[in-house]
Image (cartoon, rainbow, N blue to C red; front, side):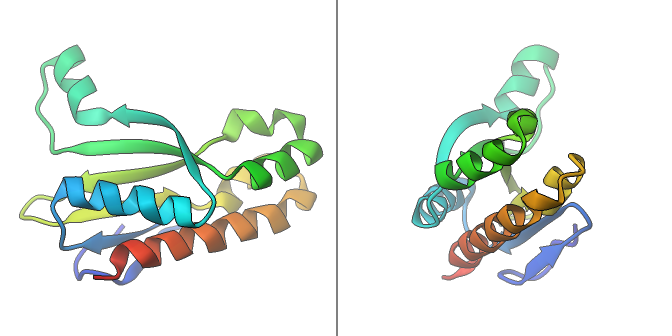
Length: 142
């Protein structure tokens, strides 16, 4: 994912994200608020830097994986494909960048549901993408 330039949405084949000129902790707070504004709760939180330090003795820049879930979308998806829980929640990554700033990114929901082969999940994935993109847009607003 290209990270130069703050605020503009960057996409890859499997994700989307925004670089913000904010300290890591401020970006985490803004991300949580933006996700909540789009109906997502944070079910899980993985402190990647702390885990790698504790398990491997390796120091890496601050990075947090937030397991975000929109209950209504998850319920719709599970009605179509009961095994969809294997692909949930949506990961949102907040990562400190070398030289300053923070990258906030998320997996592309269409990629996630594409592995199921269930075309009926595509509308739910599109709505999830729109909501996650709106959350990223909110994070990028300064």
